[in-house]
Length: 487
Image 1: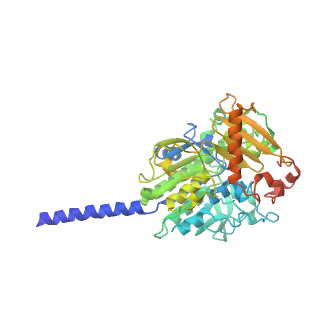
Image 2: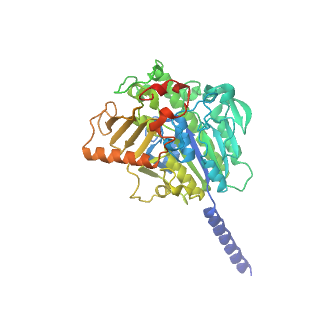
Image 3: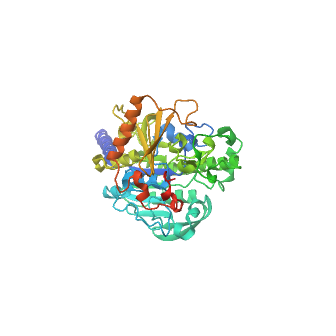
């Protein structure tokens, strides 16, 4: 009798375990996207071993890291608008950073459906923490988020949100909120509170840190001190290129070693926040059904080619590798992701947009509103033979295409004529000099691909080729509309 009861109990445990595992497999995963600001791929521990980032290193080692990840647009508002809409700037109309305040209320992205809205429709509870900046509305929550914690730039000015420590003015679900301290830690704690809310729905969290964006100051001293001895080993002052200086603010500052140490310390600060998030998920037994993506909006120059800044650090705009390449790491449970992979395919934030929808069970991305593709097959370690061969990026009236060796940057002038800059990325001097074009067959193929891409993924009302007829995005664009090259 006891033996019979034991057998029944054992079978019951097996069945319950199987049912639990089956239920977990069928359940939609929680999704967390951590996006940093101005974080170049070159400052990632997987490529720069002097970085002090054990948690990012762990995520890359155990997850999937993409070696050729790039931004669709190397400026914050355009890149973030592309991530949230799944479209290129020439489709959605945000092509530069957006000023918040009177004179710039263009109602950017009107009519667009955001990623958060689609996830809500698929049964997710959603939250945004930190930087939004994809249209002009930061104090007011945008559609698609059940919980909203962003900045109140209208109250404190746009520079306030970039303070790494001190008093920062936030908007919490539309209500003003002041926080004093290290803001990255505050955003992390608020995200964990959202995770802890009692709710049966899976969650989507978009956690956006302003680090390592300027100002390059006021980072924790204990972290800055780690990098002061090695900053000049990583990037020494000195350098030049064929492109002119964009402005005096783009030259390498006299305090370059300290500024670089502060920049790198900001990345270590974010690394610590990632550790807190991972611990919170593991402590709540949520890692087994949570996908974490770590990315940046675009890269940054911190002395390379004698420049500080991003695409507008030079004249005309640069699309240097340090400007366009971003960290891109995805980590998740074995049922969804085969970890310990390095992938060499071209991927970008539009692909991440579609992948999140794919994980959520929303197939709307297959209607090809934008050029992104789901990277789920790559995450599952599948061998994909028909992946995209070229990466295409834009900034205003400038467009770029690369195949990994050759890079074409095409500038459209106000009179519709073009200026082409070719770069041979296999050359020892990299992008220091504009090179002679490759053989005719390559020129024809790449220019044809570039034209065909924007023929499909461009709206005449928003096309970067027509920026002189579009609304002004920011205070820097006051006089640009008279310039033949826009910048």
